[in-house]
Image 1 (tube, rainbow, N blue to C red):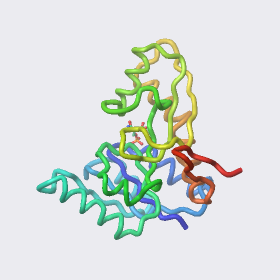
Image 2 (cartoon, rainbow, N blue to C red):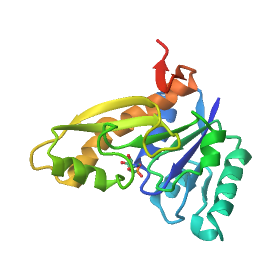
Image 3 (cartoon, rainbow, N blue to C red):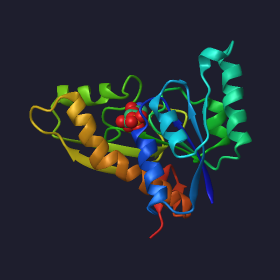
Length: 208
Ligand code: GAR
């Protein structure tokens, strides 16, 4: 049974999609051991509580230095003996020592088709604003492993979503979540939990 830590910074709709997928059997062989937030007031922690899942807050603001925060964060993952770290709208930079220790065991959901509209500065609504201002007709979401770069790790799964004329950033964000994020994030976790995902030469191979 793969033990997950799901890291969140906001409303937690992706967390909810993972919880639902575990409950309805879309994800097998995995359970959420802990939900980690960098903000104690987020609704995502409420969602964890409502489902009897342990939720904790760990914020860089509560530590004197980034190094102390990084150590405390890593200690938490070790404490819960986490196999896979799932970044579901987590807006804190992942410490390098964590990336090294959890190589190909940290995944992130990004709300565009990487390598478009990703990297530093592209998060949340800003991604959809970028998409609309460039006028592309297709966007989507990407689940990828986390490496030392920003949104540069091996891509596990992507799904395209149509951009509609007259979309607002919020409308587009909602469509990308409904038609892509909430589908591919649970699918990727299920594939990993069932041993189907490997990384070769920086690229993901999915076993048939
Ligand atoms: C999601 O759209 C996710 O793709 C995005 O934050 C949102 C979190 O929503 N992540 C990023 O932009 C990461 N660069 P949620 O809290 O409702 O799951």
